[in-house]
Length: 205
Figure 1 (cartoon, rainbow, N blue to C red):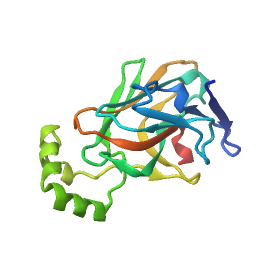
Figure 2 (cartoon, rainbow, N blue to C red):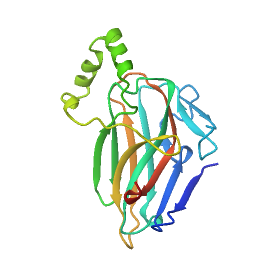
Figure 3 (tube, rainbow, N blue to C red):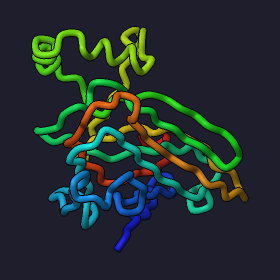
Figure 4 (cartoon, rainbow, N blue to C red):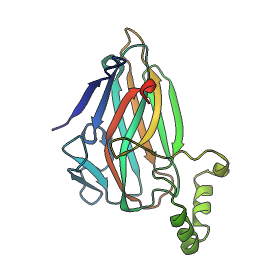
């Protein structure tokens, strides 16, 4: 059974939604060798998806703006956790994209986990400049000069990755597609847990 959570902010009266992991599209999520589905103790849903291993991570969700508050700027956030045995998530950034049916598309890049300096030092000892070579392969030369975008902590114990933002208009019911992909690094990765996508007014951040 699929689930969505619908809430109303008491102060603003604005609507927001949380789409469960079962309500979004996760590539190969039906293959037990790639993804594991289970109840996570502090999840708001019956099941969350944990990545076992893959070299191609693709997550997509969509929502109709007609179910949201009109004339409001919304942000979309992938709700995640990173397990202790995670690997391959910090080598290259993922691409996030917001695409509206009116033709507006906004893309950005974000890492799937926060930078662990001790882990980075160990990787440099073990792998040398492998990360720099991979960055050049996927066209990330000069990325160190840009602000590193990472997941942020939430009050509920999870982390969130901002996928982008969009605006709703009175009387319009556009479809908004939200996605996160990491397919350029070609490295195996695993250990990220996906709970769903939250769509909430930016003014509530």
